[in-house]
Length: 201
Image (cartoon, rainbow, N blue to C red):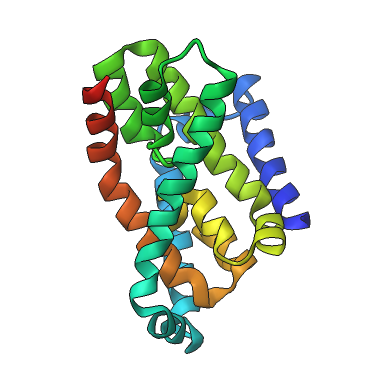
């Protein structure tokens, strides 16, 4: 819980500092965040490589590793169905397309904007950013309440990059390779599922 609050605090601090123009322009218009992500991935890679249990977990799960992204897709579909019942004014397929962004907001929101317009595109952007933030904040709680795979499913496509460090910390290093595999599969599926669903509508 403490680590989640620390992550959220740094995020809120960044938002507030940039809103009130306390951040130099040099930091705003650059790729530092991308380099920070690269460094995080490098450090996570070192910790995985140094832990012999990581590869053991993959061998034990073998084909069952494929079930992790499948269950995430099913869970997301069911979650969207519940939201649809509460927001009956919106089309189910539009909401499903937003859900099928799986946290990959930069890509899914572009597809949705092109196919459905700015309004749904902004909703997709915000919904998928929220998925990432919720995973960053609540991953330790998810791991305790719902099991070690829960933070991975919650992270969606981001489980291979931005949420990987907190997932590894919450679920254990042995789940890092599963998390990366899960994120890669969903990232590849996002453009196909989003465009497929919207073509039905």
